[in-house]
Image (cartoon, rainbow, N blue to C red; front, side, top):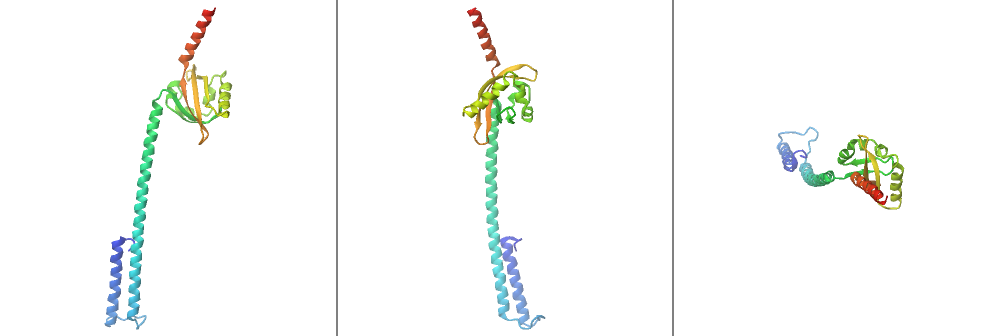
Length: 222
């Protein structure tokens, strides 16, 4: 009856009840004899029939409750799938936005040996190194900083974080070709997981212009 569903439960219960009534009728007419007892009364068959009816009703209620639980579970699954779809869509929109802006967006831990968790694809066009290389080698960022800028860059970041400010530094970064570019590094600390969320901007052209301007001013002063 449980396997057959609510309708099946009623059918199976009715069939068993009919079987009991049939055996009771045949025994009362003398067609069959109970070998275990010769004294079966109406109360025996009535109590047996009552038990069958109660079991049938109980099975019907159990199946009804199971069906309700199944519907609730299916509804919860559908709602969860909808939320997951919305989250994936939001993540895709955010990722597309991040990957289209000219700056390099990153998520990393602070310090010279901080692990880089994410770097946008623009990093390859800027430095020649892929995002996988950045996230796979925790010492890559510090190693690529110009030796003259390493200590002061890390110290400036640490000082800004300890004072509750947003770290903003400018330093020279070596590309895969061996040349150095100037980058502006600005980030903020995430309070949830204590990581830095920031961006890198290539300011080499601005730095070259500033150097040219300083040289021109020096010439004019001379």
